[in-house]
Length: 351
Length: 159
Image (cartoon, rainbow over all chains, first blue to last red; front, side):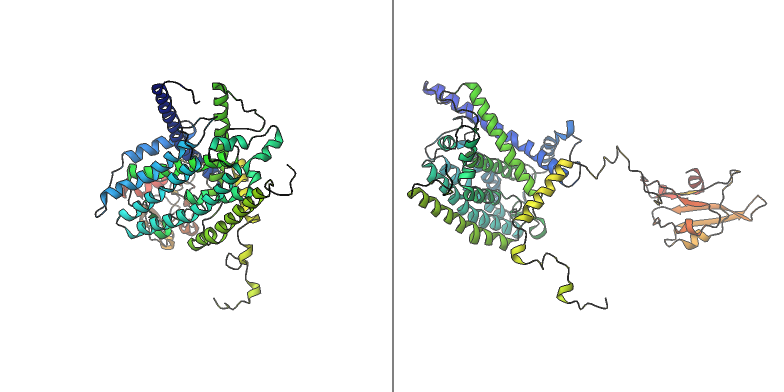
C-alpha cells in the first residue's frame, strides 16, 4: 500500500490508515470483554451475560454507559496531574505500539525501519502508567500494587525482549513484514517455517512473558482484591478506571498481534501464495487471516485465564529471573551458535 | 478433636504435601486446560434464568406455611398450642376461643405467624396432632413491609 503519490495524498492515506486501524482495534476491546465474560461463564457452567441486546451482545455498551455516568471521584491528597496521567500512560502506549503491527499485507499505521524495537520501547512505557497510578493515589495499597506492577513488568520485559532478539537474529531484520515473508513457504510444510516451530523455546518464553506483561492471569499480581484492596486502580472511578481497563485489553491485543506476527506467520498462510503486487482483495484476505489468528490467540488468553490459579509473588519473581531469563539467554546463545555454524534451528531436522 | 496425632503416611495428598517438582507444571497444566475446554464445548449451564425460569423445589422443601381445612370447610386447627410450644423461634401467636362445633373444644381466634422470625424448620408441622399446619414449597415470598410478613389466620387458611 505504499503508492508513490503526491505528499498530500500520502498524508491522507496515512491518516485514513491510522483512523481505520486504531478504530478497529478499539472495537475489538468490547467484543473481547464480552467473549471473556461468556467464556468464563461457560467454563464455570454458568450462562453469562445474555440479557442486554441479542444474546447479551450489548453488555459492554451497557458497562461503558454505567462507567460514564459514575461520579468521577478524585480522592483527597492525590497528586492531581500524575493521578490523571496514570490511565493515559497505560492506554496510550498500548495503542501506540500497535502502529507497527502489519494487520494485512504491508498494511500498517506506520512502517518504520525500527519496527519491533519501537513496539517494545513504547510498550514498556505502560510501566509508568501503573506506577504513576499507584503512587499518585495516596493509598498505600495502591502504591504496593503499582510497585508490584512495575517490578513484574520490568522483570518479564527482559525475557520478552531476549526472546524477540532471537527471532530478529534469524530474520536478520526488524521489519515485521519481512519477518512474515520469511515465515512463508508453499504447502503444508510451510507451516514448519513459522517461528513457532523454528524457535519453539523463544515462542514459549514470549507467550509466558506476554501474559506477565499484560497482567493477565496467572500473572495478574498488580491487581489483587485479597491483599491490595484491588491494586493500582483502587482509587480510580468511572472513565479513568475504564481507561486502565481498556489499556490492559489493548495491550493484550497488541501483544497477541505481535505474537501472531513474530511466531505464527502474521497475515500469511502457507497454502496461500503471497502476490507481488497485491490487489485490494488480497489485502482484505490477508487482514482476515491475521484476524483469525489473532482471535485464536485471544481465545487462548481467556482460556488460560479461567484455568490457572495465580502465582504467588515470590514464585512469579523466581520464574521470571531464575527460569525465563536464563532460558531466553540460552536460546539466544543457541540461536547465535546455529547461525554461526550455518544450521537451521532444531539442528538435526532436515529442512 | 481427641486424636490429632496422625503419622505422616496417613495424611492425604494436599497442595502443601505435593513435592515441589510435582507441582502444577507440565501435565497438570495441560489437563487443566483440557478440562476447561471440555466445559466450554459441553456448555451445560447449572444455572437458570431465574425470574423468567423458576426452579421446581425439591420434595420436602420447606417454604411458606398454610393452615388446612377439613372436608366441611372448617379449619382443622384446635388451638392446642403444640406448634407454638414446639417453635424454636417463638413466631406463632395463638389466641383460642370456644369452638361452635361439637367435635372439639377450641378453635383459634387469632393465629399469627411472624414470617420474619420463622426459621422454616418445620417443627410446627411435626408437632401438630391434627395435621392442621404444613409448610408449602412456595419460596418466592417477598413483601414491601414487615407488617405484611405477619400472616394472620385468614391469610394462612387462604394459601
